Image (tube, rainbow, N blue to C red; front, side, top):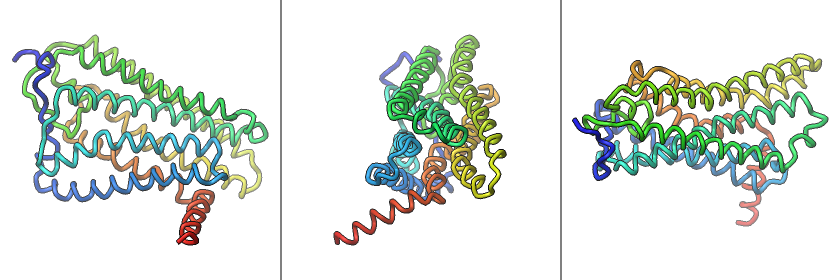
Length: 312
């Protein structure tokens, strides 16, 4: 079995969920529905945040970035999955696989950093309310957003280059529905302990460090909330931060399961279903989590709908 990744003319066959043919039609229907809801929900948040002046705040500025990120994140894998489930084409070229891996890692790394930025915004809002507008001025918000995107890009450059430097060989089958890093690593021809150690360090930096920073910020937020004497004030503070904390738990929990366990113990079958969760379910839930109990977003939505009816 020769080295595979030197043969750029060949590609991979994505096994997807063909192991469970009885599930493919059901998965196709549900994933198509979830993907449509993801596109609708995140696009709605972006449009509302631009149209309503009440949403021109740092919180919604970062939420817009998260919504745009989720749109790109889910679109990098779901159309390929829908084609796979329909049985029309299960192949992906080597170049397409590398591009998908690079884009996916870049967007995932950006979300890791962006969630830290959003935690800092919540920390400033709860712990420094009198200085919030001074701290979170527009220039700082733009700089933090740019830092998140650049951080994700750098993370992807490092990990993709390390992955593509590994000699791959064997069958051209990927037991997944997209070019996921742990599945590609299992195709390595030789002992790649040194490369895997470097990749693990890169993952710790992009996943564990941001998660630790978020926990520290929420420890300070919890202390500040407990010092609030009125129950109404506490409820408002918890409402402000609870949605973000839920998103953090869902995202980092699935990311740690996938990327921080040893390659040898990674289950491809379980990994596919976990990947469904963080590529489809979480991007669909984010708009609901952030807006379901948010009066500002509800007000903006009814205002836009009311204006549309008036124009009609």
